Length: 323
Image (tube, rainbow, N blue to C red; front, top):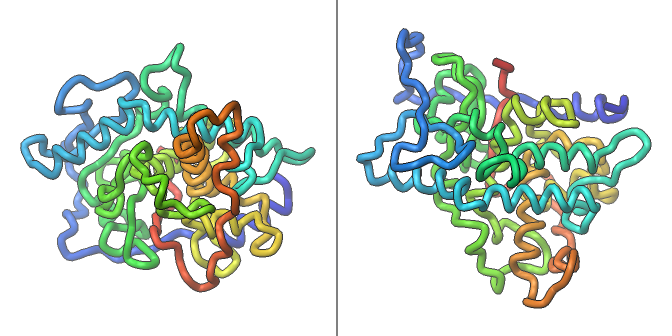
């Protein structure tokens, strides 16, 4: 990491705080906490993530289980992360909107591609997704109340709309992901209404897979195990708000806004929106678009973010402790 990047990162990375809610579970360590399991509604695909505290007999839990299963086993998550990986490798327009090109100090393109490649895996050697995902756990309980300084679905967002978080639960010492209601309300990336999109990337194209990819990049087995070699966190724009959503993520590198090109590779939402941008650009391009020409689907960069106004889909996370 270059010195300028270290200084910038130290100024903007912050730990999100949240207060416990009244319905929080006891903070007394359970002697025999439940163990994560494979997909409980049928056969799991190779390297599918693990599940905890879901009730397969409950209609809502069952629907959430199917969403989590399908985003992996349908190939959507591999597709979204693979498009991001390819965009980074070739410095395509979606990549250039959110990340800088490689230079003599940092192989940013290679590092970003490495992170996304670790998640995507390789179809010839992996199952539906990279092997690292098989070690991830999704907990149905809003367990952030167990962890000092962690967010919860009720209290974590800058605007009250938290979509998910990733943290180590002090009650069972497991690093886990929890998704909140705003995430469950999102659809598939393949079902985006192309006709409703703006000429620039926006939250109109948001999907559950984008939220899931954001959380996956936070896992301590991803950033440090990739060529990046660092934990991927949530960084802040120069106005002190988190860099969530296309305008703020783009604003990190925009010379006319934050002009902080060393920060995106440490920001989870930069990976998530860049990958979704790449996927949607191809998905919505006219039939007959050849080669990498899909990169030109969006003709404009996101508009400037409004200082003091947080992202509409705050995804508050804290840096997970290494297990």
